[in-house]
Length: 359
Length: 139
Ligand SMILES: Nc1ncnc2c1ncn2[C@@H]1O[C@H](COP(=O)(O)OP(=O)(O)OP(=O)(O)O)[C@@H](O)[C@H]1O
Image (cartoon, rainbow over all chains, first blue to last red; front, side):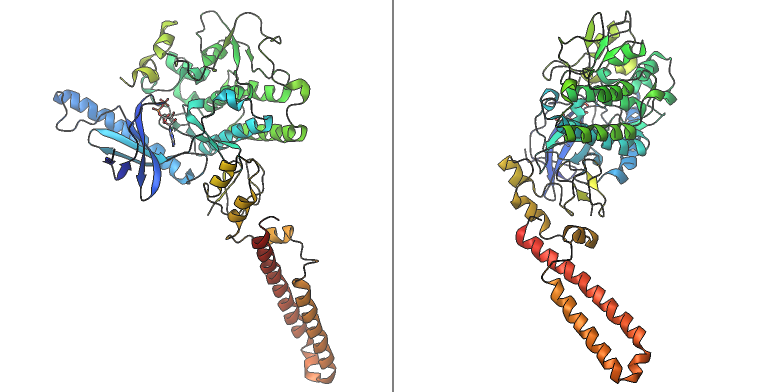
């Protein structure tokens, strides 16, 4: 337990809980508490490690790429990161032995599922989203795409005044707008991929089209989930796959679950546009949410007739609706390999996804 | 130092008065985690007097904000100062009648005295509001 890594004293056991590509623990340094993440891959070919010279050479190349990526993202984030804000950026990134480590400030997380958030008063639900949109806007202003925006990477914290604020974490998959990693190196959660990310995997879309708008798509899914507790539902389209991004890309209609809250519905619908150019920017989303919150504060909730619709209250969409982007908190995460089974749309290490990366 | 909003923990610029995200009034320079335990334990949304007071007590606040919050009229501490200074000014004016040389420099003197008066009133506002602030903890 009293092990030290890179000058950080580990205070808890390493765990893989909630992590896909890592083990993590809390640590202390100079009296401050930190979250320390140990990457399971890549591993650095130290002299004692097994493998032939060629294998070691290959591993080394991988590590160099990994390091370079992390350093560039970390230095782009550095001017944006201040302790205590809602953007939980990397404080330290280093290698010890064969393993890489990343350090961020520790967040005192409140265990609040999206469903529980959706039961909060409307203006508080919107406030959670506002804090996410604000963090995202800061990130986008720096030209960075988060690349893995999903509820698991939004930590909820109770604030001094008893409200809930969202802390945006995990910039491991971040990339500069229009300059993503090659499709085979891309990781993330297909449940939150935008249509153009799927296009990138299929080879139909170039990397330049993968911009900050991809995060806005994911934020649209998160927004629907936090506001309604169920998330957006997509019309099924033959041979289009099962993920929201695939379905939207194939022209599927979508219900946000906020049909009668016209303005909220319109905002989220725009965020979920198949065409990235039609999506609002993070700043526009932020402004839109702010207006909604002002309204919600004034009226004490959505106007009565606009309470989010229940599953049985008649949806616009006919046919089979897929409850997308709203996995039950305890439900096993989608196996990316399962997605490949559906038409083999996802290629390369997307297929490794979060599930096999822990292998 | 950035100001952390007690409602949503957004970091706002030092000079900001309201939070950019939630529009709540910002308490000056409160560290992100400072006022937490009292309110969180009490489970009282809106915060307790204790945390409000402790969040503000030791901090200095922009004059504009203080004046906005504590209008300088009607404050017992300021008026005596203003009255005394006005009395001094009037006496000076009386003296001018006698001393001819003062008359020639009257505008300079007037300007000096008025500037002094303004600065002193400002300081009084600041001092008085910080005292009241510390004493009550609640505006
Ligand atoms: N700064 C932090 N403070 C406290 N807990 C944290 C912090 N960052 C992450 N966690 C916790 O650790 C878990 C794993 O972190 P993280 O999401 O960064 O790992 P990951 O391997 O990248 O996961 P994924 O592949 O799902 O994105 C999170 O689910 C969260 O509960």
